[in-house]
Image 1: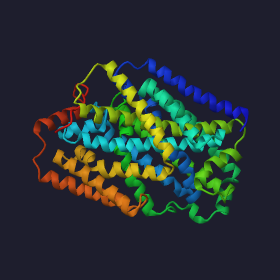
Image 2 (image 1 turned 90 degrees about the horizontal axis):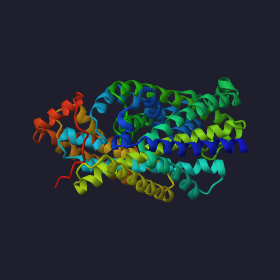
Image 3 (image 1 turned 60 degrees about the vertical axis):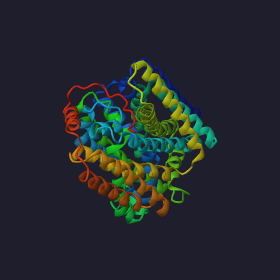
Image 4 (image 1 turned 45 degrees about the horizontal axis):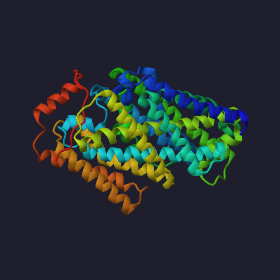
Length: 484
């Protein structure tokens, strides 16, 4: 690392804080703070959506999978892109028209307020662990850049994200995400990818140096690909961090078109990461861990200045996911859990902004504390997605697609699916496939059975739901008190 590289990184970090301050000046209401005023156009929407879904796991982890498995290592990020495409094409327009702030508020609208609190707790646990996994990644990146101690690195990276997220909420995060999207595109796709391939001698040399399995589309294994689809593709359909970005779209066309563009970008990013990892395998065949591939090729293969920009791109990947998960976690904690337990009525917009700022600060400090205590990123991320998909996929998609689904069925689905997933993770292990397979099946059976054996959802509730889906004007949702 040279002075030029350090300067690039320091300027980038200072720019993130400056954008946080600028975003604060644009934030005057709850809508501004939580969903950027619901007025993003296609360019900003697609850039911010791509930024949040392509985090440290997609960048550093994607290169690591390429190092370990070759081109088939792209499948993890490919399934993220495919999930985003499915969300954008089939569901985003309806989601955008709901004009809510959280997934739990959508469930309240659909089922009549009977499942919001428990689903809020599940979603909060997911977003909290997602923020933790992103924050842990700072340790790796800042160690490469500055040689910092793990705890210091986590505190430094976490403090920057907490600062700009607390200042301006979604407006600050949107502005920083756009910069991070550009930095990632230039650093990873336009610089690191071609340099890595050239350093490895080109594709012909890579093929001659590595086993044929490195160039097989299914070298990673069909079961692994199927598990990725269940966890990551379905996770894209229902995560609060993703839905909250859909809520920022100016209209349903922006949500559909911009999301499709972002999903397509993810597919290209997936292939790029796998190719970079494959090139790293040729250059450094004996690394101790596949996850070291990204840092190693950046340190050893890139010229002065470019090295700093690519490391800034890695920071961008981590920060975009971390900030998105943090505001989602705080939004759920404040609007779906705290407000419901207090039975708080809607208050003035300025007061709500202050309350949401406080929750981002509190959740941010909590995330940093947990990140210092934990060390296994993969297991933490797997727990987050298993609980999310096993507990909430069926009642959310059931609510959108099956009119006979009931609130009791949704509650049973969340409870049975979530409990099954957690129990099987404790029995079979966090990284086993059985928890998500059996958990989803149990959730589906509980949802259908209980819905069919209970009274259909009230006609007035369904009428209000269909009017909201059709885009009829409706007031912004207020927090719903918890049921007795």
